[in-house]
Length: 213
Image (cartoon, rainbow, N blue to C red):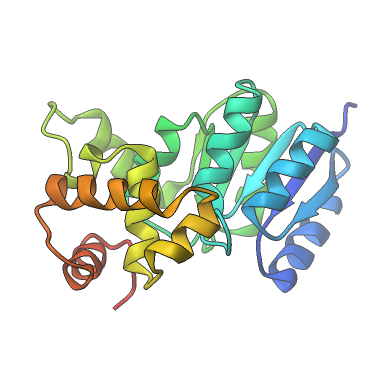
């Protein structure tokens, strides 16, 4: 029996400890490494070459979306399973567009995590039951893209950080970009989303279910 080597990424140590125990209680799954940020996730992937990455989305630093993008750019065969509190079509669509194979939420039963890891390790897609309705809706889309689909991956990342209250300089440091480049992204996303200031960005993120009120 081949053992599935896993990189577990979550910024909460207690969460990682719980799922490490769960996964290593199987005969075929081993936690190869852990990471608490997107930066650590990318570094660990390059160093360890795991079979599967279990990736949280909301973390300090570059976050899960950007980490997924960097890992997939480095290795387009990377097999990534998103494990997140976010239950909406926008995040599902974004991560699928980045090439992830699986998406489950943190309210999934423990056995779902094990099943999902096994599927993804085989190169098979696995979408949690609670996300199936969003997947169906996405597949039935006739081309009228949701509002946020107008944003490029980087613009979406900047949008989320702005909505969380980060300044342009904060975002430049987090994403390792110049403030000028972040400013350009901000200008473009304001035009695309028809918003004029940070308050409107935040309200839009809340309405879209991307941020808690």
